[in-house]
Length: 323
Length: 284
Image (tube, rainbow over the protein chains, first blue to last red):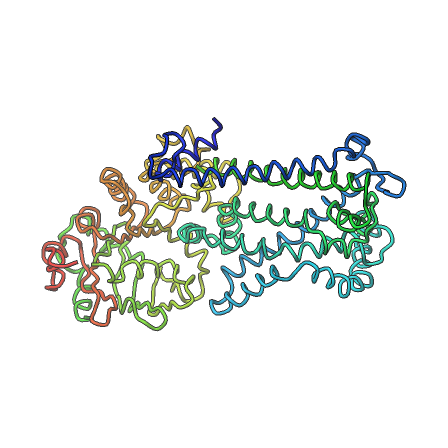
């Protein structure tokens, strides 16, 4: 028995909820059967789901093999199905989106909790949470109408001048591309990061804060050395959820990334992510191309699942260090 | 109410010495002086008009029933109320000859001179025992490892914790028992070498044996640091403190200082009948 399931069992036992070890008493039979049926249906649905995607993409794996993962050219018209450009674009846009959104999100949370006067806390919080309610296609349009020209004329030339036209701000610019997709993504994941990190930061006991201050710590020392470390597990969870959303985000990315599957040479490059490619190509796809899109879906699922699993492992390790 | 203060405060030093250690305090200037200190929240007064002197190298206890403003008063001494926007501290609190609310001493510097131990042990859970002890020094900008090591050892020795933790300084503070955690917090406060140590009911969450150890520690520590302790426990005040302030909630629910004096006098021969009632357990 794994460590986790044994601890889950102990937890259930302590709540008196378990029925797994002893056979159910008669009056409990209906309940016993129904929760098991629920679990069974859910489990079956997941298995069926994964299997169907596997099945869908099977012919792509058998005919191209590992080339799907390592191939550098994605060109359905020439039957080239190398997903590496798409994988890279997916990972890069997510990473850059996190780089932008995490500091801003944490700063926003800390400001809301520690610096805003009481009467401003609720309006600012609702404002940030409102961002989560905006449909992604609206973000896509916003990127298209507002950000593309702005990026093209102002932001990208400025960034290029900072690195002197060197990596990662090299090459031609036209507004569209990985950088714009990352920025749109960062705005989209900001509410998630703020909402969760605000809750975990606010949960840091006031005694810890007073303990630090009473030793002569400044407010910023208290936040950096005591509050953030103590909330780190939850903050990590917030980042993971944000990453999950960024990895899978489809329509807004498809609208601003340029839909041009190529190995990115810079953040100004146009590109295409796994999800944006599926969304833009599935309409006309059939046969081998459809199978290849199924393979993309599988790759995307594996990436998001690994991010989640990795985050969970790290979180558990952090918690163990805690205890 | 000010009558009792006027009666007691100036006279304390001229009174016949009832406590063998009082001789010291008549010679050295007070570590802190409180002059008409009031604390209010949103305009509602929580403690009013407290005036008394805290003698150096002695233990001063603040006693009184719940709601009498003991903790509120204590927290005004290291400006912890600064965190609460609605809080307002009036009157004068002198640390030596510095008015701590006068603006000449930044709160961070003040708090490195006036340490604090809280009701519940609050070691930083993400830090090791060692990091906890030296955290105050690090906040104050000390980085040299040799200095930190030395300070950590001496603070842990002072807090009677060195023997039990010296072999596991890298362990987390939360692996210690409640009493050990509280002593860790005392060590953490001592490492900064404060002149004054504020203790807010430091044993209220501890078992009797841990409580006893902390009380013994306070008596040992007063040679190097002036201690002001808030306690619910009258026996504790009688056991550890040299001077005692008795606070009581007045008619408008604001805490007031009823009587201040040497602990032996407060407990054996109080001037105010309300003090006697409280000491004898008639309320509170």
